[in-house]
Length: 115
Image (cartoon, rainbow, N blue to C red; front, top):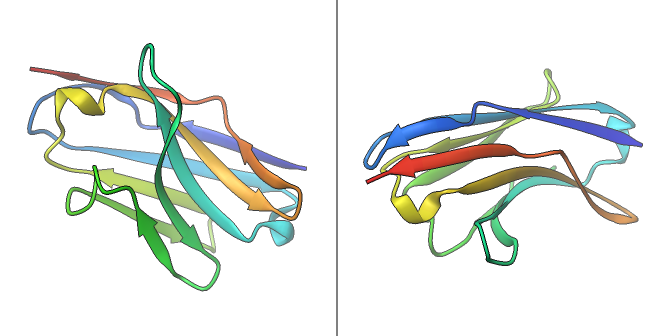
């Protein structure tokens, strides 16, 4: 099993920045990719960003150019740098790890952007 613990959420004004962190523990060797998703109130969870073990990166169109995903393999940690934040970015952000059995997710961290 893999355990994921997110941190770094909070309340910021529109145009501001936040950096989310996600520390992975457990069966780290089994992880193929790590990523982030988010769920806004009343909406379905949506993909935000993914980074593979090989370093390939994908972003949702809604965050391209504003969000940057990165990982520190030595610390088993993945980051999501979020810049130029908008009120529509308000959501619970979940860190995920992709293994052979599919995606597993952390408990989430709240990000709230005020206008």
